[in-house]
Every structure is written in structure tokens, then in C-alpha cells.
Length: 314
Image 1 (cartoon, helix red, strand yellow):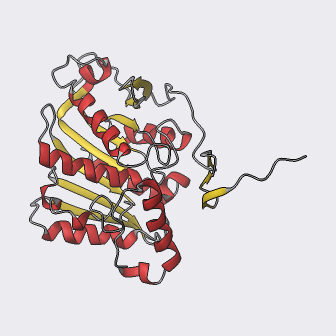
Image 2 (cartoon, one colour):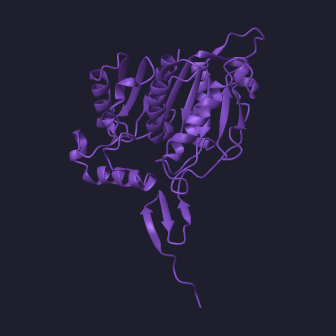
Image 3 (tube, one colour):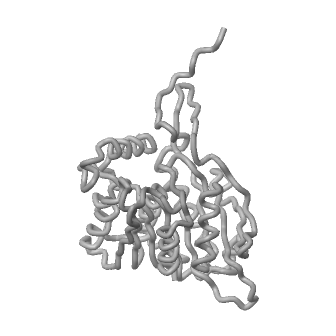
């Protein structure tokens, strides 16, 4: 006799599904590739940051041939995927960060945090903060990772991420502003198609009721203890500490056709009015949708954004 069909309790079609027995099925973002030496000379390696939690990272260094090299800026990158899919080791992120390390001539630490729903938020925030503090422990050239000791200028540190990763990057910037950790200077944050929302629809959200509802539903799936769409973690303008963002400049990248576009512009406008005091800019890609630069990294708009990010990091 055939077994009964497993009961589905949560379903985001073509994205992620959860069954009653607790099984989680991810439909995309499951592939991984090993670290490598790229033909361009960019090298990468994987490191375990916390043996207990399993938090890890992939580190990239550009082609460094001069033994008397100068120290390089550091980018701490946090991948997207709705807090639920993708890893720092997926081919999508590996290929993109190889290109960014080469174009910007920076060291990159790509954080692999634990994902919801097995590890609901705020775990991803805590994992990312642990990774940041682990990186900072190298600021006196005495940390466990030789690449960070040898190649990083800790007075030129940046955070970046896309989608949910941009959300995490922003929230890490708030923690830097509140806690002022020793060991590094956070110069700027690049938020690529940031995953923010809010209880009241704005801009194009009013015409895309389904897309807005899906974004709100995914947030509560990833963070079931949240108060909802006006939680400061997902709606940063509701955060009383918004103006304490711990950097001097922010670049927000949005896509013209992205459901999240207007949240990026709203973030820029509200941060500028908050009393923060830094410089915030927006780069909009005409005709493009969410994370288009990862889907088609060689298109003209993706190349232009890569160059803008490289200039921002330098």
C-alpha cells in the first residue's frame, strides 16, 4: 500500500516548502562550489568561524603579487535568499564575488549564516554579528586567519548584501553605531535591492498587492516571533536608532521593475532626514528586476553596477 502524500504546512511555490513532519524542501539556491583560484588570479578559501554553531565564511583575495603590497579595503558581504535559501558557497555568489574582488581590488569575507526556518531569525543577525567580530579580531594582525592579518586595512571596512543580505547588512550597521566595536572602522554600506517592507504600502506596492503580501508572509515565516511588517528589523524607518547607523556613506541599488524598488528610495529619503549626517545615494537600474545582476551578471546594467560598487569601495 502506497504511503500517504506528505502534508504541506508552508509553501512558497518554486522557492521553499515545509512539510508537517518538519522536512524542509528548497527548490533553488541549493548548489555549492568549492573555493578556487580564479583565472584572473582571485583566490578563495573557506573558514569556520564558530565550531559550535557552524557559522563559516568564504574569503576572497585579489591577485596580490607584490610582497610589499599595501593593505586593501575589506568588504564583509552577506548573501540574500529571503533568509531561507542560498549560501555563501553557491555558484551564484562565488562567481559574483570573484568578479567584485577583481574589479574593486578588495578582500571579501562572504558570511554563511544559519537559515530559517530551521534556524529562525534573529539567528542570522546574531551569526552575522559573530562573523563581524571574528573579522575584527584580526585588526592587530594576530587573528587565526593569515589572509586577514596580512592583507586587510581595518580602517577601510565596508558591509554589503543583496535582498535579505542587504537587510542584515543594514542591521549590522545599526549595531556598529550602537556598540562601536573595537578593531575596525566601518566606512560604508552597500544595500543591493534591500528586503524591507512596512505595514502601510508605499509607491508601486499599492498596485502589486500579491507581491507585497508575499514579502510580508516570507518575513513572518523567517521570523515567527516578529511583531509584523513594522518590526524595525524589516522596516528600518520604524527603528528609534535609525539615525545611529555606524558609517559615513550608504549606496542603495534598486531595480526599476523590482517590487522592493520603492522601499529602497524610501530608505534613502528617510535616512537623509533622520539626522544621521552621512551621505546616502541611490543607483537605479532601468528596466531591471530583483537581483538581476546575479541572474545576468554580464548585462550592461550589471556591469555598470559592479563598477559603481567598486568605486564605492575605493
